[in-house]
Amino acid sequence: MSRCQPVLQLLDSVSEPAEERPSWTNRQARERAIRAAHARQASQRRRHVDPTTCEREYSASELEFMQAIQEYKQSSGRMFPTWSEVLEVLRDLGYKKS
Image 1: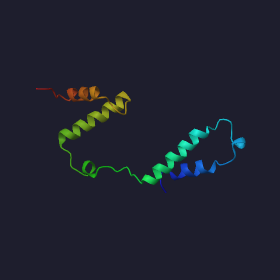
Image 2: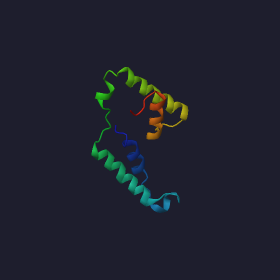
Image 3: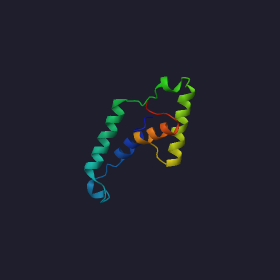
Image 4: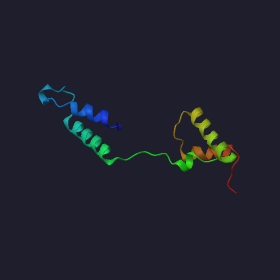
């Protein structure tokens, strides 16, 4: 079952006449959601993880950098650090522009 299937079933099940629908239902938004869910299902697009980055041996410096970024994300509470923050982590590791 695709990830969209439950959404499609839910959206398609809401087919009662407008006068029986709750007043908060937005018909245009519902129709857009149905079209988007159908388009996602029809595209058959998959989200793949690049195996070249997952199944390789990392160097010690790569592992050190990944660990430092992970620690920064945990300590700052930011899931996606800005490039300035990445540069800060690199400087803290001792890297500098020559």
